[in-house]
Length: 89
Image (cartoon, rainbow, N blue to C red; front, side, top):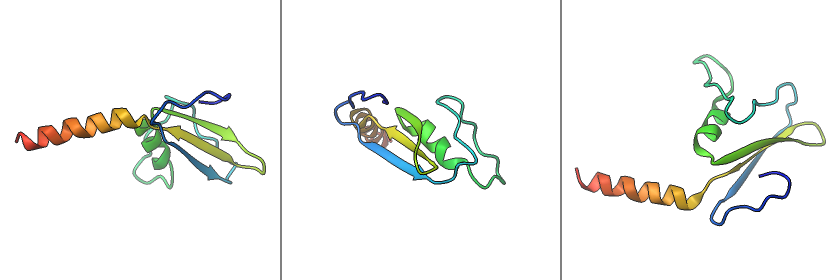
């Protein structure tokens, strides 16, 4: 994703910026699920589970931006597959 890499056709990019700097998110594949009483951590778990690509970039002024891409053609084929299964019940 980074370094000027071209996006895949049909891949929307979502960016979320956070001004908190005390904790940076873990890298790709290192996200742990939040514990039941944790105040945070669920959003990145969803990103890690649903996004095809994601990365964290530091930003100035202080903070970070999480960039995600989702391959829409893959998701559309999954939805179509699930809807066909639903009609066969």
